[in-house]
Length: 77
View 1: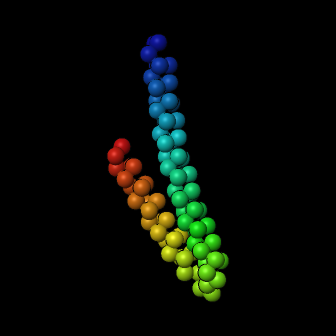
View 2: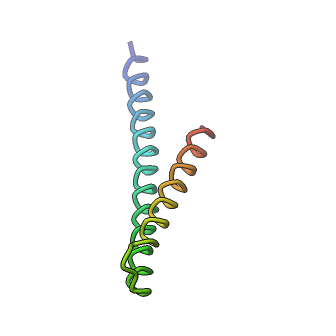
View 3: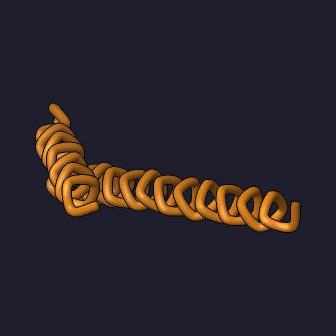
């Protein structure tokens, strides 16, 4: 009977570890995309572009980059 609490504790700690790992990946994606958009906005502001070219390019590039990193990290696990 003493094995049941230990088993539940291991399952719970493993679930928390998995949750923390994947939520960390989400924050990493959020930061990468946010920096790309911010950089694009600042470049468009600096160049005084009427069409937000740098915002589009850097935001799409950061989305692609963050998806690449996500797939790479999930594949390694």
